[in-house]
Image (tube, rainbow, N blue to C red; front, side, top):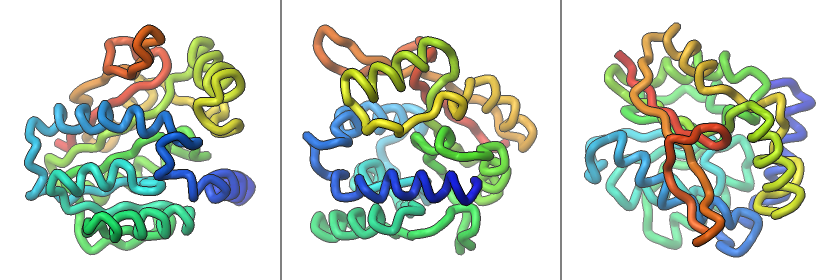
Length: 233
């Protein structure tokens, strides 16, 4: 990521760091979709017992996903490049009596002591200048038979209207300027990159909003938000 983009992303999320655990605040949508995220992760692991798993949560923010996985028994490491995010995550975990290894820094530069069974990359790739280089480095710390689970945003006219114009500017679901259309990624682009490193696609699911009952759910529709799971062969 260029210095200019790093500074821009850092400032954007640094300003929001105190909002992470406010369920009615700027990250309200992330609180609403957290159960769906965790259900998807568990469906890809075929277990609710995570006690044997070393898990890395990349771009963990204030720890919403990290805490959920820790409560299920996972040995969780959460990394974020915004120091205030990590401070918020550490304080909240401490208050809840959870033992999560939170680390501040660039995950591409950190020298981890061990490899991971599961790497979670939620809403991270679309904020990077070079997500392909990021994947190249990340897969090196994934154990054989380990899995990478990604969530990101597809790139098409529907996602542009929905994820930026509607979600940011009209409904105010997420802070303005969170996303840039040219950074969105098509599922087949990720799959092509993963194949180069011996990772095979296991599953793809869309995440859609039901305006009738105001709920989020998994779907076959991947036009906007989607999850994908890859296995290291």
